[in-house]
Length: 438
Image 1: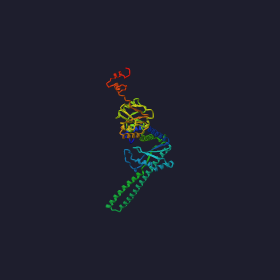
Image 2 (image 1 turned 135 degrees about the horizontal axis):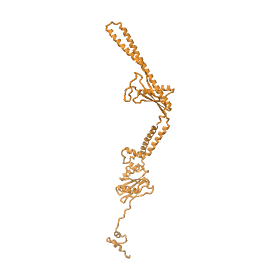
Image 3 (image 1 turned 180 degrees about the horizontal axis):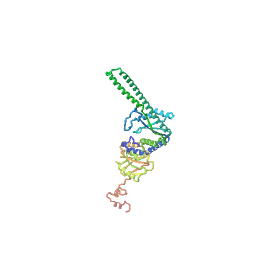
Image 4 (image 1 turned 90 degrees about the vertical axis):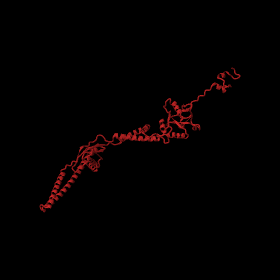
Protein backbone atom coordinates (compact mmCIF):
# COMPACT_ATOMS: atom_id res chain seq x y z
CA UNK A 1 0.00 0.00 0.00
CA UNK A 2 1.43 3.35 -1.00
CA UNK A 3 0.78 6.56 0.79
CA UNK A 4 -1.78 8.79 -0.85
CA UNK A 5 -0.36 12.02 -2.27
CA UNK A 6 -3.06 13.94 -0.43
CA UNK A 7 -2.01 12.78 3.01
CA UNK A 8 -0.24 15.50 4.92
CA UNK A 9 2.18 13.25 6.82
CA UNK A 10 4.69 11.76 4.42
CA UNK A 11 6.75 8.68 4.90
CA UNK A 12 10.51 9.11 5.27
CA UNK A 13 12.82 8.27 2.40
CA UNK A 14 12.81 4.73 1.16
CA UNK A 15 15.46 2.60 2.82
CA UNK A 16 16.19 -1.07 3.25
CA UNK A 17 13.83 -1.45 6.20
CA UNK A 18 10.92 0.02 4.25
CA UNK A 19 11.62 -2.22 1.27
CA UNK A 20 11.72 -5.29 3.49
CA UNK A 21 8.54 -4.16 5.22
CA UNK A 22 6.82 -3.83 1.85
CA UNK A 23 7.92 -7.33 0.85
CA UNK A 24 6.69 -8.70 4.17
CA UNK A 25 3.29 -7.13 3.58
CA UNK A 26 3.13 -8.65 0.09
CA UNK A 27 4.88 -11.91 0.93
CA UNK A 28 2.12 -14.03 -0.56
CA UNK A 29 2.45 -12.36 -3.97
CA UNK A 30 6.25 -12.53 -3.78
CA UNK A 31 6.32 -16.21 -2.81
CA UNK A 32 3.79 -17.01 -5.51
CA UNK A 33 5.92 -15.40 -8.21
CA UNK A 34 9.07 -17.14 -6.96
CA UNK A 35 7.33 -20.52 -6.94
CA UNK A 36 5.91 -19.87 -10.39
CA UNK A 37 9.34 -18.85 -11.71
CA UNK A 38 10.98 -21.98 -10.30
CA UNK A 39 8.22 -24.18 -11.71
CA UNK A 40 8.50 -22.50 -15.11
CA UNK A 41 12.29 -23.04 -15.06
CA UNK A 42 11.86 -26.74 -14.29
CA UNK A 43 9.18 -27.10 -16.97
CA UNK A 44 11.40 -25.37 -19.53
CA UNK A 45 14.27 -27.68 -18.59
CA UNK A 46 12.04 -30.70 -19.16
CA UNK A 47 10.96 -29.37 -22.53
CA UNK A 48 14.50 -28.57 -23.68
CA UNK A 49 16.08 -31.51 -25.55
CA UNK A 50 19.34 -32.78 -24.05
CA UNK A 51 22.63 -31.83 -25.68
CA UNK A 52 26.02 -33.55 -25.37
CA UNK A 53 29.40 -31.85 -25.53
CA UNK A 54 32.61 -33.64 -26.52
CA UNK A 55 36.07 -32.03 -26.31
CA UNK A 56 39.30 -32.79 -28.13
CA UNK A 57 42.63 -31.49 -26.84
CA UNK A 58 45.19 -30.36 -29.42
CA UNK A 59 48.80 -29.50 -28.60
CA UNK A 60 49.92 -26.79 -31.03
CA UNK A 61 53.62 -26.74 -32.02
CA UNK A 62 55.71 -24.25 -34.00
CA UNK A 63 55.94 -25.13 -37.69
CA UNK A 64 59.23 -23.44 -38.54
CA UNK A 65 61.26 -20.26 -38.49
CA UNK A 66 58.52 -18.47 -40.35
CA UNK A 67 56.16 -18.82 -37.35
CA UNK A 68 55.09 -15.31 -36.16
CA UNK A 69 56.15 -14.67 -32.60
CA UNK A 70 53.75 -13.86 -29.76
CA UNK A 71 54.37 -11.41 -26.95
CA UNK A 72 54.86 -13.30 -23.73
CA UNK A 73 52.40 -12.13 -21.05
CA UNK A 74 51.34 -13.42 -17.59
CA UNK A 75 48.38 -15.08 -19.30
CA UNK A 76 50.20 -16.48 -22.32
CA UNK A 77 53.77 -17.60 -21.80
CA UNK A 78 54.09 -19.59 -25.02
CA UNK A 79 55.73 -18.02 -28.09
CA UNK A 80 52.77 -19.07 -30.22
CA UNK A 81 49.78 -16.78 -30.61
CA UNK A 82 47.12 -19.29 -29.56
CA UNK A 83 44.32 -16.72 -29.63
CA UNK A 84 44.88 -16.44 -33.37
CA UNK A 85 45.05 -20.22 -33.69
CA UNK A 86 41.74 -20.52 -31.83
CA UNK A 87 40.11 -18.24 -34.38
CA UNK A 88 41.60 -20.28 -37.21
CA UNK A 89 40.20 -23.47 -35.72
CA UNK A 90 36.70 -21.89 -35.76
CA UNK A 91 37.01 -20.60 -39.32
CA UNK A 92 34.76 -21.64 -42.18
CA UNK A 93 37.70 -23.29 -43.99
CA UNK A 94 38.32 -25.71 -41.14
CA UNK A 95 34.55 -26.34 -40.73
CA UNK A 96 34.22 -27.19 -44.43
CA UNK A 97 37.20 -29.53 -44.27
CA UNK A 98 35.75 -31.27 -41.17
CA UNK A 99 32.33 -31.68 -42.82
CA UNK A 100 34.00 -33.09 -45.94
CA UNK A 101 35.94 -35.65 -43.91
CA UNK A 102 32.70 -36.75 -42.18
CA UNK A 103 30.76 -36.87 -45.43
CA UNK A 104 28.08 -34.41 -44.27
CA UNK A 105 26.87 -31.11 -45.62
CA UNK A 106 27.62 -28.98 -42.56
CA UNK A 107 29.10 -29.67 -39.16
CA UNK A 108 27.83 -28.41 -35.83
CA UNK A 109 29.29 -25.11 -34.56
CA UNK A 110 32.55 -25.50 -32.69
CA UNK A 111 33.84 -23.76 -29.59
CA UNK A 112 37.58 -23.35 -29.06
CA UNK A 113 39.12 -22.22 -25.77
CA UNK A 114 42.71 -21.73 -24.64
CA UNK A 115 43.69 -22.64 -21.06
CA UNK A 116 45.98 -19.98 -19.56
CA UNK A 117 49.74 -20.53 -19.75
CA UNK A 118 49.45 -23.45 -22.15
CA UNK A 119 49.90 -24.34 -25.82
CA UNK A 120 46.74 -26.45 -25.91
CA UNK A 121 43.48 -25.83 -27.74
CA UNK A 122 40.24 -27.29 -26.39
CA UNK A 123 37.99 -27.99 -29.37
CA UNK A 124 34.39 -28.69 -28.24
CA UNK A 125 31.32 -29.63 -30.26
CA UNK A 126 27.77 -29.81 -28.87
CA UNK A 127 25.20 -32.05 -30.57
CA UNK A 128 22.02 -33.92 -29.74
CA UNK A 129 23.80 -37.29 -30.09
CA UNK A 130 26.92 -38.09 -28.00
CA UNK A 131 28.57 -40.08 -30.79
CA UNK A 132 28.04 -37.27 -33.28
CA UNK A 133 29.56 -34.69 -30.94
CA UNK A 134 32.65 -36.85 -30.34
CA UNK A 135 33.13 -37.59 -34.03
CA UNK A 136 32.78 -33.96 -35.07
CA UNK A 137 35.12 -32.72 -32.34
CA UNK A 138 37.80 -35.13 -33.56
CA UNK A 139 37.13 -34.16 -37.17
CA UNK A 140 37.56 -30.47 -36.31
CA UNK A 141 40.89 -31.23 -34.61
CA UNK A 142 42.20 -33.18 -37.58
CA UNK A 143 40.94 -30.58 -40.04
CA UNK A 144 42.66 -27.82 -38.07
CA UNK A 145 45.98 -29.67 -37.96
CA UNK A 146 45.77 -30.48 -41.67
CA UNK A 147 44.99 -26.88 -42.52
CA UNK A 148 47.82 -25.68 -40.30
CA UNK A 149 50.24 -28.12 -41.98
CA UNK A 150 49.20 -27.08 -45.48
CA UNK A 151 49.49 -23.40 -44.61
CA UNK A 152 52.95 -23.98 -43.13
CA UNK A 153 54.13 -25.94 -46.17
CA UNK A 154 52.81 -23.30 -48.55
CA UNK A 155 54.56 -20.54 -46.62
CA UNK A 156 57.76 -22.58 -46.50
CA UNK A 157 57.64 -23.22 -50.24
CA UNK A 158 57.19 -19.53 -50.92
CA UNK A 159 60.22 -18.72 -48.77
CA UNK A 160 62.29 -21.38 -50.57
CA UNK A 161 61.33 -19.94 -53.95
CA UNK A 162 62.25 -16.44 -52.83
CA UNK A 163 65.66 -17.55 -51.48
CA UNK A 164 66.37 -19.62 -54.60
CA UNK A 165 65.53 -16.74 -56.92
CA UNK A 166 67.80 -14.43 -54.94
CA UNK A 167 70.57 -17.05 -55.04
CA UNK A 168 70.29 -17.34 -58.80
CA UNK A 169 70.51 -13.55 -59.12
CA UNK A 170 73.62 -13.41 -56.93
CA UNK A 171 75.28 -16.26 -58.86
CA UNK A 172 74.59 -14.49 -62.16
CA UNK A 173 76.13 -11.29 -60.82
CA UNK A 174 79.11 -13.29 -59.53
CA UNK A 175 79.69 -14.86 -62.98
CA UNK A 176 79.62 -11.44 -64.60
CA UNK A 177 82.13 -10.11 -62.07
CA UNK A 178 84.50 -13.04 -62.57
CA UNK A 179 84.47 -12.64 -66.37
CA UNK A 180 85.23 -8.94 -66.03
CA UNK A 181 88.36 -9.56 -63.96
CA UNK A 182 90.24 -10.97 -66.97
CA UNK A 183 89.97 -7.69 -68.84
CA UNK A 184 91.36 -5.58 -66.00
CA UNK A 185 95.08 -4.91 -65.50
CA UNK A 186 96.68 -6.26 -62.39
CA UNK A 187 97.26 -3.63 -59.71
CA UNK A 188 94.76 -1.23 -61.20
CA UNK A 189 92.11 0.35 -59.01
CA UNK A 190 89.34 -1.09 -61.14
CA UNK A 191 90.64 -4.62 -60.59
CA UNK A 192 90.72 -4.07 -56.80
CA UNK A 193 87.13 -2.91 -56.82
CA UNK A 194 86.11 -5.88 -58.92
CA UNK A 195 87.85 -8.22 -56.49
CA UNK A 196 85.98 -6.72 -53.54
CA UNK A 197 82.67 -7.02 -55.38
CA UNK A 198 83.43 -10.65 -56.13
CA UNK A 199 84.09 -11.35 -52.45
CA UNK A 200 80.82 -9.73 -51.42
CA UNK A 201 78.90 -11.76 -53.97
CA UNK A 202 80.60 -14.95 -52.83
CA UNK A 203 79.57 -14.32 -49.23
CA UNK A 204 75.96 -13.51 -50.28
CA UNK A 205 75.80 -16.68 -52.34
CA UNK A 206 77.10 -18.76 -49.48
CA UNK A 207 74.57 -17.28 -46.99
CA UNK A 208 71.69 -17.78 -49.41
CA UNK A 209 72.76 -21.35 -50.04
CA UNK A 210 72.84 -22.08 -46.31
CA UNK A 211 69.41 -20.49 -45.83
CA UNK A 212 67.98 -22.45 -48.72
CA UNK A 213 69.33 -25.69 -47.32
CA UNK A 214 67.84 -24.83 -43.89
CA UNK A 215 64.43 -24.23 -45.42
CA UNK A 216 64.58 -27.52 -47.29
CA UNK A 217 65.35 -29.41 -44.10
CA UNK A 218 62.65 -27.81 -41.87
CA UNK A 219 60.36 -30.40 -40.27
CA UNK A 220 56.75 -29.18 -40.35
CA UNK A 221 55.00 -30.30 -37.15
CA UNK A 222 51.70 -28.38 -36.77
CA UNK A 223 50.73 -30.18 -33.54
CA UNK A 224 49.25 -33.34 -32.19
CA UNK A 225 45.99 -34.58 -30.69
CA UNK A 226 46.71 -35.31 -27.03
CA UNK A 227 43.13 -36.00 -25.93
CA UNK A 228 40.70 -37.66 -28.29
CA UNK A 229 37.04 -36.82 -27.76
CA UNK A 230 34.99 -39.62 -26.23
CA UNK A 231 31.19 -39.88 -26.44
CA UNK A 232 29.88 -38.17 -23.26
CA UNK A 233 27.79 -40.27 -20.92
CA UNK A 234 25.75 -37.38 -19.44
CA UNK A 235 24.21 -34.39 -21.22
CA UNK A 236 25.87 -31.03 -20.78
CA UNK A 237 22.57 -29.21 -21.09
CA UNK A 238 19.98 -28.46 -19.92
CA UNK A 239 21.54 -27.72 -16.55
CA UNK A 240 19.33 -27.99 -13.47
CA UNK A 241 21.13 -25.23 -11.48
CA UNK A 242 21.04 -22.91 -14.49
CA UNK A 243 17.36 -23.34 -15.31
CA UNK A 244 16.15 -23.49 -11.71
CA UNK A 245 18.32 -20.57 -10.62
CA UNK A 246 17.22 -18.50 -13.61
CA UNK A 247 13.56 -19.28 -12.94
CA UNK A 248 13.83 -18.43 -9.25
CA UNK A 249 15.69 -15.19 -9.95
CA UNK A 250 13.19 -14.19 -12.63
CA UNK A 251 10.34 -15.01 -10.24
CA UNK A 252 11.99 -12.99 -7.47
CA UNK A 253 12.38 -9.97 -9.73
CA UNK A 254 8.84 -10.30 -11.09
CA UNK A 255 7.44 -10.81 -7.59
CA UNK A 256 9.26 -7.76 -6.27
CA UNK A 257 7.99 -5.64 -9.16
CA UNK A 258 4.45 -6.98 -8.71
CA UNK A 259 4.60 -6.34 -4.96
CA UNK A 260 5.70 -2.76 -5.50
CA UNK A 261 3.04 -2.19 -8.16
CA UNK A 262 0.36 -3.74 -5.97
CA UNK A 263 1.48 -1.67 -3.02
CA UNK A 264 1.32 1.51 -5.09
CA UNK A 265 -2.15 0.85 -6.42
CA UNK A 266 -3.81 -0.59 -3.29
CA UNK A 267 -4.61 2.02 -0.62
CA UNK A 268 -7.23 0.05 1.32
CA UNK A 269 -6.69 0.10 5.07
CA UNK A 270 -6.67 -3.47 6.37
CA UNK A 271 -4.69 -3.18 9.60
CA UNK A 272 -3.95 -0.56 12.21
CA UNK A 273 -0.38 -0.38 10.93
CA UNK A 274 -1.73 0.57 7.48
CA UNK A 275 -3.61 3.48 9.01
CA UNK A 276 -0.52 4.92 10.70
CA UNK A 277 1.69 4.28 7.68
CA UNK A 278 -0.61 5.69 5.02
CA UNK A 279 -2.35 8.50 6.85
CA UNK A 280 0.17 9.58 9.46
CA UNK A 281 -2.55 9.69 12.13
CA UNK A 282 -1.93 8.00 15.49
CA UNK A 283 -4.02 4.94 16.28
CA UNK A 284 -5.38 5.27 19.83
CA UNK A 285 -6.84 1.78 19.88
CA UNK A 286 -7.43 -1.26 17.72
CA UNK A 287 -10.76 -2.96 18.40
CA UNK A 288 -10.46 -5.60 15.72
CA UNK A 289 -10.53 -9.16 17.08
CA UNK A 290 -8.74 -10.61 18.90
CA UNK A 291 -8.33 -7.82 21.41
CA UNK A 292 -7.31 -7.50 25.03
CA UNK A 293 -9.97 -7.29 27.75
CA UNK A 294 -8.65 -3.92 28.95
CA UNK A 295 -8.49 -2.32 25.52
CA UNK A 296 -11.73 -0.36 26.04
CA UNK A 297 -10.53 1.10 29.32
CA UNK A 298 -7.17 2.06 27.82
CA UNK A 299 -8.92 3.58 24.81
CA UNK A 300 -11.18 5.68 27.06
CA UNK A 301 -8.16 6.95 28.95
CA UNK A 302 -6.35 7.80 25.73
CA UNK A 303 -9.34 9.65 24.31
CA UNK A 304 -9.86 11.73 27.44
CA UNK A 305 -6.14 12.54 27.65
CA UNK A 306 -5.84 13.51 23.99
CA UNK A 307 -8.94 15.68 23.70
CA UNK A 308 -7.97 19.34 24.18
CA UNK A 309 -11.51 20.53 25.00
CA UNK A 310 -14.83 19.39 26.38
CA UNK A 311 -16.64 18.43 23.18
CA UNK A 312 -15.44 15.49 21.05
CA UNK A 313 -16.78 14.82 17.56
CA UNK A 314 -16.74 11.12 16.63
CA UNK A 315 -16.56 10.59 12.85
CA UNK A 316 -17.21 7.06 11.61
CA UNK A 317 -15.82 5.86 8.25
CA UNK A 318 -17.85 4.45 6.61
CA UNK A 319 -21.02 5.91 8.02
CA UNK A 320 -22.89 2.58 8.04
CA UNK A 321 -20.24 0.89 10.18
CA UNK A 322 -22.36 1.27 13.33
CA UNK A 323 -25.24 -0.60 11.74
CA UNK A 324 -23.18 -3.72 11.17
CA UNK A 325 -23.75 -5.18 14.64
CA UNK A 326 -24.73 -4.00 18.14
CA UNK A 327 -22.16 -1.54 19.44
CA UNK A 328 -20.43 -1.91 22.77
CA UNK A 329 -20.70 1.18 25.02
CA UNK A 330 -17.49 2.99 25.83
CA UNK A 331 -17.67 5.39 28.76
CA UNK A 332 -15.31 8.27 28.11
CA UNK A 333 -15.78 10.24 31.32
CA UNK A 334 -17.91 13.06 32.67
CA UNK A 335 -15.80 16.04 31.47
CA UNK A 336 -16.24 15.04 27.81
CA UNK A 337 -19.32 15.65 25.69
CA UNK A 338 -19.53 13.26 22.73
CA UNK A 339 -20.94 14.62 19.46
CA UNK A 340 -21.93 12.24 16.68
CA UNK A 341 -22.49 14.84 13.95
CA UNK A 342 -26.26 14.42 13.83
CA UNK A 343 -26.76 18.01 14.97
CA UNK A 344 -25.88 20.69 12.44
CA UNK A 345 -24.06 22.56 15.20
CA UNK A 346 -21.76 19.65 16.10
CA UNK A 347 -19.07 20.55 13.57
CA UNK A 348 -19.01 24.18 14.66
CA UNK A 349 -18.79 23.59 18.41
CA UNK A 350 -16.50 20.51 18.38
CA UNK A 351 -13.13 21.04 20.08
CA UNK A 352 -11.55 17.93 18.55
CA UNK A 353 -12.45 14.97 16.38
CA UNK A 354 -11.86 11.24 16.59
CA UNK A 355 -12.00 9.07 13.47
CA UNK A 356 -13.39 5.55 13.72
CA UNK A 357 -12.15 3.60 10.69
CA UNK A 358 -13.60 0.30 9.57
CA UNK A 359 -10.73 -1.97 8.53
CA UNK A 360 -11.04 -3.36 5.03
CA UNK A 361 -13.83 -0.95 4.09
CA UNK A 362 -12.06 2.41 3.80
CA UNK A 363 -9.15 3.64 1.66
CA UNK A 364 -6.44 6.11 2.57
CA UNK A 365 -7.91 8.63 0.13
CA UNK A 366 -11.23 8.62 1.96
CA UNK A 367 -9.51 9.21 5.30
CA UNK A 368 -7.48 12.02 3.74
CA UNK A 369 -10.70 13.62 2.46
CA UNK A 370 -12.20 13.48 5.97
CA UNK A 371 -9.04 15.04 7.39
CA UNK A 372 -9.21 17.90 4.89
CA UNK A 373 -12.90 18.45 5.57
CA UNK A 374 -12.33 18.71 9.31
CA UNK A 375 -9.25 20.85 8.77
CA UNK A 376 -11.25 23.43 6.87
CA UNK A 377 -13.35 23.92 10.01
CA UNK A 378 -10.28 24.06 12.28
CA UNK A 379 -11.22 20.84 14.07
CA UNK A 380 -8.04 19.00 15.13
CA UNK A 381 -7.96 15.22 14.94
CA UNK A 382 -6.67 13.54 18.07
CA UNK A 383 -6.33 10.09 16.50
CA UNK A 384 -7.97 7.07 14.95
CA UNK A 385 -9.78 4.05 16.36
CA UNK A 386 -9.80 1.00 14.11
CA UNK A 387 -12.52 -1.64 14.20
CA UNK A 388 -13.36 -4.66 12.10
CA UNK A 389 -17.10 -4.56 12.79
CA UNK A 390 -19.25 -2.17 14.82
CA UNK A 391 -17.23 0.42 16.74
CA UNK A 392 -17.95 1.18 20.40
CA UNK A 393 -20.68 3.62 21.27
CA UNK A 394 -19.02 6.63 22.91
CA UNK A 395 -21.26 7.70 25.80
CA UNK A 396 -20.33 9.99 28.71
CA UNK A 397 -20.61 8.83 32.28
CA UNK A 398 -23.75 10.00 34.06
CA UNK A 399 -22.95 13.14 36.00
CA UNK A 400 -23.53 12.73 39.78
CA UNK A 401 -26.25 15.00 41.13
CA UNK A 402 -24.92 17.66 43.49
CA UNK A 403 -25.50 16.92 47.20
CA UNK A 404 -28.30 19.11 48.59
CA UNK A 405 -28.70 19.43 52.38
CA UNK A 406 -32.04 18.53 53.78
CA UNK A 407 -32.55 22.08 55.01
CA UNK A 408 -32.21 23.41 51.48
CA UNK A 409 -34.81 20.93 50.21
CA UNK A 410 -37.22 22.09 52.93
CA UNK A 411 -36.51 25.75 52.21
CA UNK A 412 -37.39 25.23 48.57
CA UNK A 413 -40.70 23.65 49.53
CA UNK A 414 -40.04 20.21 48.17
CA UNK A 415 -41.70 18.68 51.21
CA UNK A 416 -44.70 21.04 50.87
CA UNK A 417 -43.69 22.99 54.01
CA UNK A 418 -42.83 26.67 54.13
CA UNK A 419 -40.03 27.41 56.55
CA UNK A 420 -37.22 29.80 56.84
CA UNK A 421 -33.69 29.02 55.74
CA UNK A 422 -32.58 29.01 59.32
CA UNK A 423 -34.75 26.03 60.10
CA UNK A 424 -32.70 23.05 60.93
CA UNK A 425 -33.39 19.67 59.43
CA UNK A 426 -34.47 18.22 62.78
CA UNK A 427 -36.98 21.06 63.29
CA UNK A 428 -38.40 20.44 59.88
CA UNK A 429 -38.96 16.82 60.73
CA UNK A 430 -40.92 17.71 63.92
CA UNK A 431 -43.03 20.41 62.34
CA UNK A 432 -46.14 19.34 60.46
CA UNK A 433 -48.60 21.20 58.34
CA UNK A 434 -51.83 22.47 59.84
CA UNK A 435 -54.44 19.78 60.22
CA UNK A 436 -51.88 16.94 60.47
CA UNK A 437 -51.21 15.07 63.67
CA UNK A 438 -47.80 15.48 65.16
